[in-house]
Length: 503
Image (cartoon, rainbow, N blue to C red; front, side, top):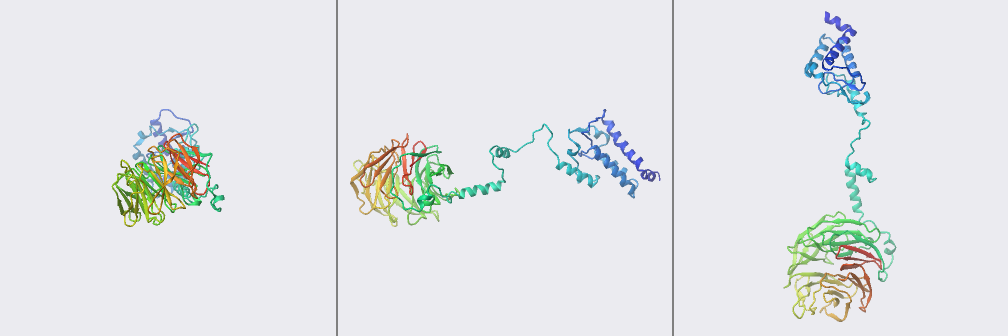
C-alpha cells in the first residue's frame, strides 16, 4: 500500500527521480557546470539528450506510472536501464560541451531508446535535420563540387553528365559549319591558291603522317589527322579550330588513315600490326584485324565499302571483309614492303607501290593487280630507279600520279598499258626519303605536294607549271590536302606534329 500511496503523489515521485539522477551525476562530477550548452546523458548507452529532455522524460515517466496497473513498472524500468549502463560509474563523462544551442544538439533516436516516448524521438530527429555547422568551423565540400564551382559549371548528376557527353559526341557529324553553308547550294567553283594562314592546330606529340578532309560536303569542315604518337584526331578546321575528339585505338604509330565513303568511320593502319575501322561519333573500334605485319597503307574498296586492303612490311597485300573480319584475298609479290595502295576507277584494278629497286631500273616498283583474280596485270609501269612513296588518282581524267624519290611527280595513264607521260613531270620540290603525299583539287586543275624543305607546292596539272610555293612549315611538310568545297582552303602537316589551315 505504501507504493500505491507514493505513486499517487506525483510531486513526491518527481522529486524522488530527480534525486536519483542528481545523486549519480554528483558522484562522478566534482563541480557543477552552469553553461547552458552542456549536454547531459540519461542512463541509456551511447545516447545524448539535453537537460530539458531529461526533465520531460522523468515527467512523462511519472505520468505513466500513475496509470500503470503494475506499481513497480517505473522503478523497475529505470533500474534495468541504469544497470545496463553500469551504474553511477558511467556518469563520469556524461557532460560534454558542444557549444551549440539546444535546438541544434544531436538528439537520440526513438528506435534506439525503447523507453523514450515517441514524441521525444520525433523532436530529436527534427533537431538533427536542422543541425548547422558551428561558427568558425569550415564545412567539408567534396572535391568534385569545388572544381565545378571554381570553373563556374553547374554540378550535375553523373548520369546527366554521360548523357551530355553523348549529346556532344553525336553533334560531330550533325553540326554544319557556318562557313560551309554558303557553298553547299552552289556549284563548286574553280580551285584557287591559298595565300594566308587561317589557323594553326598543335596537338600531336609526333610527326603527322597525313591529313584528310571529310568527303561529305555538309561536314567537310572536319579534318582527320594521323600521327606517329599513336593517336588520330578529328578537328573543326574550318571555323573554331578545336580538336573534337582524340582516338586511341592503336598501341603503335598510326601510319595511314582515311575516311570511309559514308563519312561515319575511319580506316587506320598502324605499326602495331592492326588495321581498325573506328566509329567517328562514339570513338569505339567496330572492326579490328591483325595483319601480322606493320601496316603502312590501307585503302577502302570504292564500290564495295565492306572490303579494305592493307599493305606494309610484307611481300603480300591482304584484303579483309569487315563483316566477318576474315581475309578474303591475298596478293603476293616478290617485294619487301608496300608503300601505298591506290584503287583505280571502278575498283576492278588497283596499283601498289613498293621499295623494290634494281640497279638500273625500278622493276616491280609499281604493280597493277586484278582485284577479283589476284593476278598481276602489269609490273613494268615505271622504269626509273626511284621508289614511289605515295599515289593519287585524278578526280576526272583517266590518269594517276606517283610521288617519286627523284624529287618529281610522274603522270601515268589509268588504262592499260598504264604508260608514263615522259613529257610532263612536276618538279621543284624535294622528297629526300620522306613519305611526302600529293593530291588533287576537286576539279583536278591543281596538283599540290609537300616538300622536305617544309614548303607546300601548287602545280597546274595540265601545264605542269608551278603556280605558287607556300612557306608553310619549318620542318618537312608531309601532306597537303585541298578542301573539297572551299576553293582556296588547304590543310598541311609536318614532321614536327603541327597542322596548319590556309586560305
